[in-house]
Image 1 (cartoon, one colour):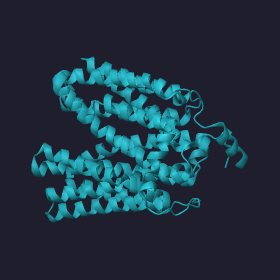
Image 2 (cartoon, rainbow, N blue to C red; image 1 turned 90 degrees about the horizontal axis):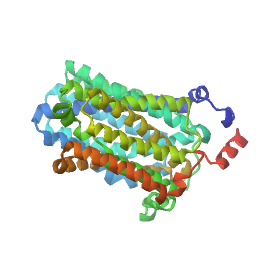
Image 3 (cartoon, one colour; image 1 turned 180 degrees about the vertical axis):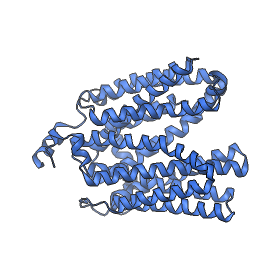
Image 4 (spheres, rainbow, N blue to C red; image 1 turned 90 degrees about the vertical axis):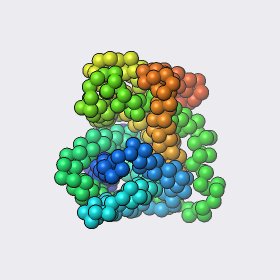
Length: 419
């Protein structure tokens, strides 16, 4: 392994265990995106109910929320690679069940909702295991680059998965379920091939104290608390995804094709930014950069809210996606580096609760404020709130705002000494 101070992107791609995980995440994410497209379309085809579409999302979120603390404890006690491999295999079984139900003609609303529950429960274990696994596979100084590269792959899968699923749906839901099954199997095999040095861990009994250890750790580490809560409030206030259909139809007057472009614009901006961060990771003034990125996200939402130009709206959303990607990479790297390995699963689980809550509650907040203030008022007010949050966090979390290096000097010296 090269010395951490000279670690390059090429060195990262030669880390075979990391590349196994990266490939598994890309294939698994693409499969999940395709599966969600198929389930949503299938449900609407069966029932014609927008309420049932909402229930699909709720049935996936609820078990992830309820199981999060226990899942974090499991991730910290057991082999993380095997947990991810098992989760991918279970998702493959779900795709197989849907394929069989579709071909045999007994797919029902209850079956789709029940399998959505399974997917949500599995994700509760998979997300923290994946997040806590990466720091074991690369040196600390390479972690920002690894996080950016992982995000680039994820964004590519998020963009390509639904597009491929939509094309395959021409041949029917069964074709999408079959393709998802194949991708899940590939991802599970990649994770099963993963070999890395598993640190020795004390097998703690499951107690209320051990389950809440991640919450307690975040509360007492102000840098971690600031980073995690910043994302929660920024996405909660600044998200506009739920209102994009209104903007496409009634404000920008573009129709369904415009809605598709509006929904993909943030992902395109995020993908482009993650590629840049893979080559040139943020190394200095990371706290200030993080807060500027969140503030930029808020400004983009204000611009989008007032815009009546489709081109300006697309640009604003793309820049917002890029700013959010800077936030994601810095935040995830800080959280992983500030957390000891024996706690990473539980801390990542709490982090996933914050992320899930901000996305779900953010859509509710957008809809509720739009009902009171109209869509423009909702988006603009949310953008202003996000900017104010970024400014407020300068005073509330000075250790985060003043953070210079993303990797503490002590970790750099330790890595170089062991290289």
